[in-house]
Length: 358
Figure (tube, rainbow, N blue to C red):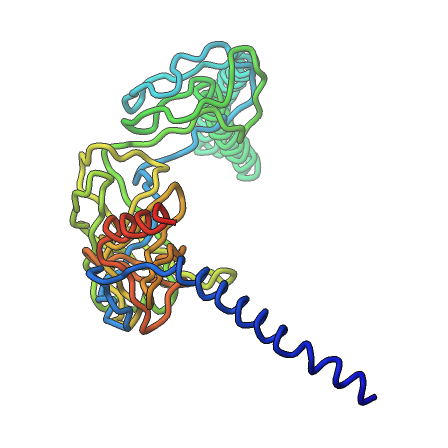
């Protein structure tokens, strides 16, 4: 055992030399990765007020929008309009074949004429019997029977007139008309198709009057009810004040959100039903990590910042929240007390110079 211990003690100086050499090599490697951060302007991340407004995504929709559906059955004889056509109220959009409806109207008219003749006969009979009754030549029971026949004939005449009105309405349903001035947004049928009552024919809306629909969390909806002011931000950056705000009284039982409608002024250029748009709404003041938008590095769909530490600069991906002017909230990716480069271009140049010197 003593010989083995003596044997390892003889190698101890050699192992110590090898260890020191490895540490020196590691130190040199780390030294090469050191970045000179002197002169790089930094911002220390801290909690700040996120402001009393928030940006929300909303959907543009027309105030007047409807699905024009068939109210009778038939075959589509002709379609007179197509998608994106401007139409006026009452304008004919399509026509159905009307053979069945016209036959029904003819039957109703024939029944009306027959009932009219019966009423004329019943009226004349009652008048004649009434004159005879005055002379006491017939009984009161006979006169009452004549009166009942006359009243029954008049009731049947009213029913016949209702049938004529119904058949005329069914015939009118074979002509599809625009309910208001607007634009055709959808077309669901082609000429020659057979349609049934309730089947969609066209979708149309009035693009002149628009509104924005937003689903808000309960707390934010409550703030909006107390402080009703909002703006819409167009893609050009232009802000439009909302004319009126409608907060629905009930929340959705599944999503627990409240629907809000923002009425827009007429004639806002560039907006169409179905588009998404940003709305700026009041919100309760809260705290969050806020950094300047000028410190962001945008590469494709990824947003990052340059994190500056002792002798290191690293590009780190972050997740953003609400924007407030030139500031943006950071939801994930940064911690309080960390420093980021206020000028991403300068940090990138410094990092590139260090990599080039390796």
